[in-house]
Length: 73
Image 1 (cartoon, rainbow, N blue to C red):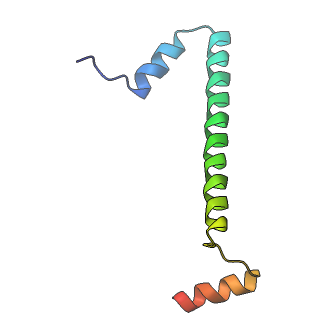
Image 2: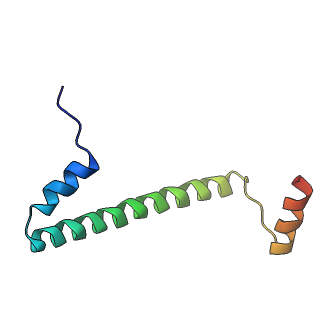
């Protein structure tokens, strides 16, 4: 079984690269994280729409929301 790559191993390997390559890796990671967050948000919106269609959501003012929270305590 191959040994597990640790974050420190990855950082040490990256440190061996040129500054330009390190910047390129940083940009690739930044873009991947943006895309990951975009997919997470899209899934959250999909779930929210589904709950709305099923009538599982509520609406009201902020005061209504706070009142409901206080009643649940």
